[in-house]
Image (cartoon, rainbow, N blue to C red; front, side, top):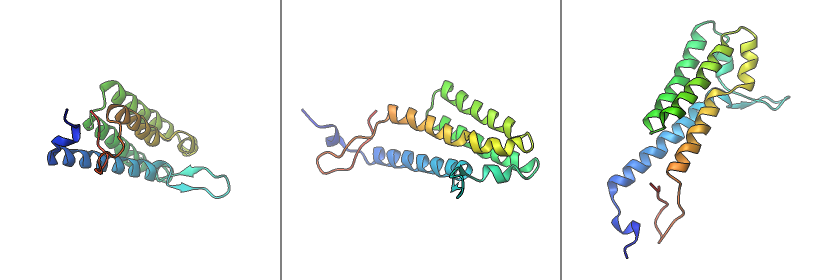
Length: 144
């Protein structure tokens, strides 16, 4: 009986590498927008989303645009329509909260749509393509 790694394909490695690069990029962008900095006194995490919303109109448009891009990338990674719809709903809720002056700034501290969306996507992708441990001296592979 042959082992699954006996039929190694460089094309598979390229796809796997690209998949993980996209996931890392999504994690970084979500963290930058929602939880990049820990506030010293209260210990809450805040990102660029809150200060962007201080710029009337343009800040909300920019943060919503980046959040929509995260949803689009999730769709490109193969997330089912139901998950993409849920992610888009999180963006809509965040945008509606952020559109309210003062309340929206506080809302950005408690409702982090980008962190939520990346976590939803991560759980889906990990279930679909669980990372396996090393075998026979080679690196881990993606199942699926």
